[in-house]
Amino acid sequence: MEQSLPRAPGADDPLPRSFYRRDPVTVARELLGQRLIGAGRRSRITEVEAYLGTGDPAAHSYRGLTPRTRVIFETTGHAYVYLIYGMHLCLNVTCEPPGTPGCVLIRSVEDVTGPGRLTKAYGITRDHYGTDLTQTGPLYIAPGPAPARIEVTPRIGIRHAADRLLRFVGLDA
DNA sequence: CTGGTGATGCAC
DNA sequence: TGCATCACCAGG
Image (cartoon, rainbow, N blue to C red; front, side, top):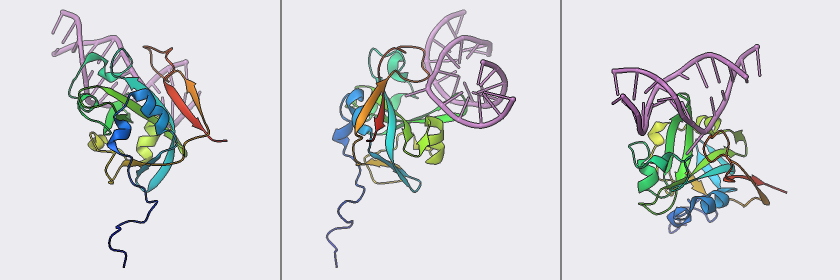
């Protein structure tokens, strides 16, 4: 039988670490259309925000390395999950090489809009903090078709650097 | 529009 | 040790 190939071509192989080893704006834009896989879902990513490692007062990494922000500084392509407003979890993907902070907030996929509802739909908890998203597992990201075009807007719900155009929405057709 | 909710990080 | 801050959502 087909023993040399454990999986069929076209399977949802995770995006490689090199995809994430770039600046948050590039990673954010290219993350649109890719598939977030977990909890039986494989929906395409439709809305993201870039948080820059330096010079971005809206980014959690702005005030330096802390226990909470550790993965932002030390990993590439891992999940940064944190609790916001005492109630909702947000899923971010770390980027840049280790030693350089930077991450991308995944706000929505095709059928789930909103960062808090997205984590709920995927069953993401704080236990997912630090999960390697380049490994096939309970939560990872695999290739999907890029959107036809990208809308660029300011980020949602922040006070600092509210004028910066770092939110990206993927639109088809 | 507002309230609910709790971890975080910094001032003291 | 306290408390302002916070990348949200559901309900009026």
